[in-house]
Image 1: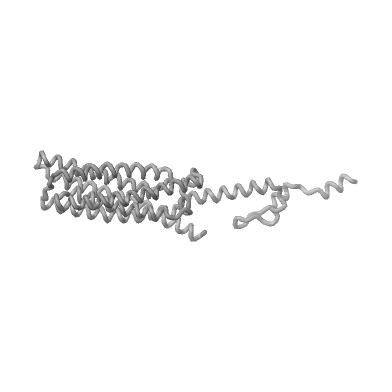
Image 2: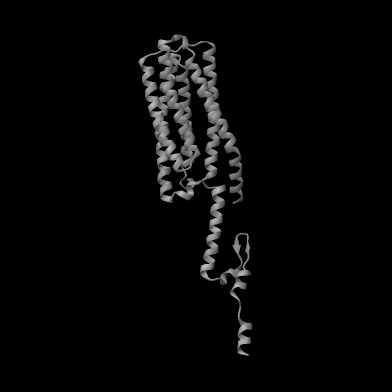
Length: 279
């Protein structure tokens, strides 16, 4: 008799756990009676799902690899590199445009435009990382890349227009020591900046930083191309079109990269924007 009463009054814990329901991401009041370890496991699963969803929708991969203090340290380094890039490339842009006007160099004009583009892209990176809380924000990242794509396209059109005009009118470049100095300094400085931006972009999984690094890399190539085309023209004046040809190739490269950025980033901006409004 006692055994039958005990069996009737006994409640199976599994049945209680099975009656727990989840609605809109919240557990029902029944879950309050669960053992603490069980509740913790369920909370852990929920947090994992939120993190997985955030990684795909709203956060960059760096959020899973970097600790908060590490992310902020690299964010500050990105800001410092961007400020240095703005100051240095602004000086180089003025020097390149001066050379272009004085020596009729299409490559120098193209480098001046690319240096100006580097200033703009570094300003965009500054906006991208000026908010410490948004260091892993995918939406902010995609917006920055979208703006960079537009700037790249506009810059490439100017470079192509200048190069084609000078080829048609057969403008010949002039060569002197000042042109060589500007070329070497521009090439070395831009390549150093490109390496720093590539490294930081890889750590922070930032395509905006990598794009800025790509622009600095192109600037370095253009700096050396001024030197190469001028040196070739010094000994072979029949190859006067080399300078303009290099300008066209660089303009097409920047144009292709800008178009690719727009194609890649426009859908992602819409996706993350919808996700943020939903949240």
